[in-house]
Length: 354
Ligand SMILES: [Zn+2]
Image (cartoon, rainbow, N blue to C red; front, side, top):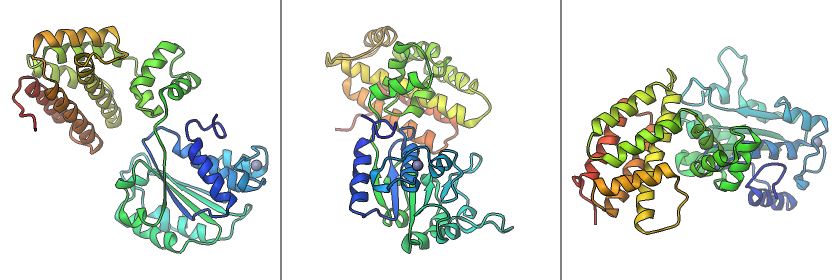
């Protein structure tokens, strides 16, 4: 079952169906959940349901009326889509209060107008994590005294990443990661690969996110994984050679920083999976490890002492590396820190907390 072709979020759809039936729709929502699980698509479909000529409470847009067609074309006059421009780190405040040259009057003014065609005006603000204080402040009045018939949906990754002023004025809707089965189905549907086995493997590394699955579909990544796993199995030996190889591979992703960050994230996740597999093997737990991972773990058991506590610390260091990538740390330095840290942990030089 999937609501309107949006996979994995039937529960959220059901919640909206209930509030619409009771005519209790709030005026601002904050959608949170990992990237790449369909929150924006859900918001857009909800907007379509509200703007369609059919009764909104059905939550079943017809897909054929003028309103539906314009929503699908993202050109409906009562639908406002705001997102962080690719080359900016925040959503510019102009998007809310208008530009100096008057060409853009800004979302707050547009929302204050009566709807043109539908019963409501709907605004979807993507990348809500990138709202800075100035942007949030300019939106506050609209959130506090929302114009009648308006609905604002902010889309972010977690409630904690939002400024308290925004968070406290929105109804929070949590979206869960997708199941591996749904990710696998989407990978095949969207043609990331046509090979069902590869799709299953990508889905396992996806963390329930299609965006993450897409990052792992980089064909150059998988041959390098062998090199990485062999290097990790040999730690603490040759850690600087491994860091250099990783740095060169990341560099080869291209000039764009986002591509290099993406590639680093995948490598760190391969590494975290290696330590998780060590724990699973130690506990004789069930696993889906492939041959490459299995033989790396066997080799590691011969090269370094069996120490499950240290592996847990290594996983934590890996998660910290992922966070630092998201905070735009200088990649070559971060990669050296990360591999060195794992080398130190494997050598028993990092004290494991009790
Ligand atoms: Zn319609």
